[in-house]
Length: 260
Image (cartoon, rainbow, N blue to C red; front, side, top):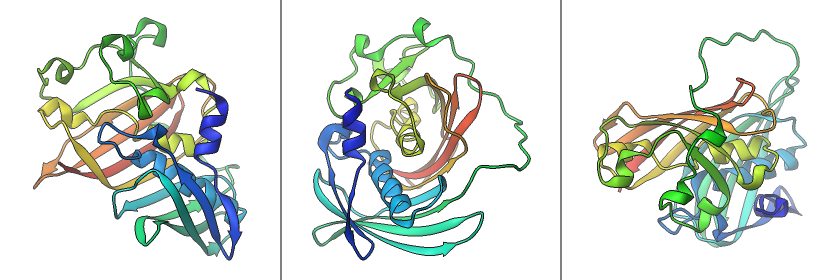
């Protein structure tokens, strides 16, 4: 992937009065033919931060209200509070008269403060020892052309034999190894197949997504852990952890999704 694609596809231009113009492209479409939810979040988060003149993002919570389409869109932003340690704003994404998504995000400096890690990254073979799913029948086009994946083992659902455990660990990165910033982490928490596919549920759509952004990652691949443990009345959670190759937790998320 050209370095320019990510920059262009997550950019927005200020119009004035807190409004920004952007274009959603089909380069990040899912197999359902719609722009990926993490991709929708990335330009919203970037645009809100730029409009506020804020520090790096700390947390972003987005609710998806309508199915997006590739094309022109409008981001309407407002500042809720500019604190010394935390700045908070909100943004709504609109396509014509359709309200697509609503975001509340907080930003802040990353200086000082205690750090304690009580979890460990996924235990994966090195990326070059893992399989590229493109060599094993993964569809082409859309988001699959923008993200590189490496899997330690072939998922059961890919052979029509879901293994019954809705969890997966894998390596990811922006295609070609492009530098990963905070909005890109917001894409990567939602860029792989949902783990509920291992219980035979082949289609799921995000309703709400909350992302905690801890650090910019060291260069290289991102170790990813995805799990689902609760499916209730057709809705399920999906938890994600992203770890860099240096063993640092860089982001985590939880989403509520609905089976289709």
